[in-house]
Image 1: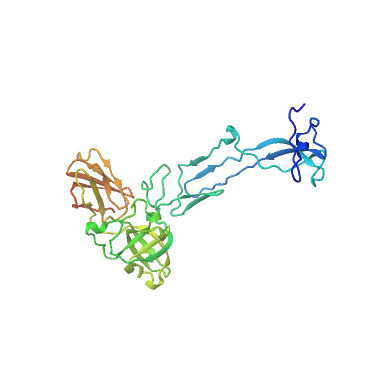
Image 2: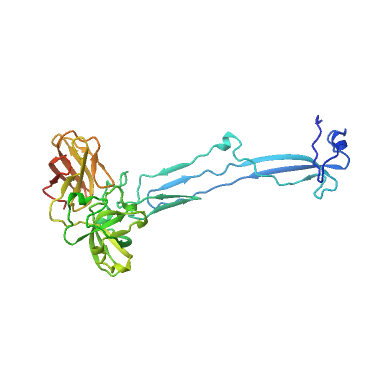
Length: 366
């Protein structure tokens, strides 16, 4: 092929004199004193990324595509001075910078697929962490064993209630017996004899699902104490850890110890008196907010009927342990159906929707 333009020449030292640049020379050749050097470069880059995943709770698998393969060749011609150290006649391999791996629409395509199975782990309180290359996915655990088809952690029985034991740590904090996030103090509640107040880690909080739950806690010396969850322990508390009021902590160890290892499980509170309901300040037929107090076992859900029990409407449980309907139910008196995590139900009739009203049930969960 005849070139219609002069080949650009590179000078190893200094600049080429005007005569050399502007002078006429044969096509495909360099001026006197220069040698044509041709570099033929072939680059092949291929990378495969394999992701290993393992099941430790909800099954999470992420497929990360391999970096696309680039194949190409490039020929570079240039003129070098005859005294250049690297001057070579003929063909020689030379380094070339990596090409743009996303230079075409096809190469720019990326696919990331996340699959979460509907089969949930039966282990309780094990933090689920799956490492994917430089990414980490952490699944927040809850206090319950999830059913095969449930998408809500409140729809099945907590395993500790039937004998599961959880390992964690315990510390102590100062406060009132029922003060804290569960807001039992607004119900003028007094803990039953032999039960001490405690805070549960925010990592296990699960929208106040365990407010009012009783735990049997065993310390390092083998001593045990029964506590009720009345508060939330902040983020620094740690997964599965408890913060006990001083009177409860002292049943397990001296306060000056500060932190101890414990094992605990959810148990029935063994309360002999009926549970009761208490509406929140500001509750009315236009904005409904109520909590369950003094229950023997944790509460799963609360529903309201305005037609004598023919139909039931759900409520939303808030992090501060009240079941609410922001639109209210439009009537001053409702029937309330409470369902425990064990599946039992208690119906309380003629519950007043008005602010700060207490309504006693006639029984408690077994």
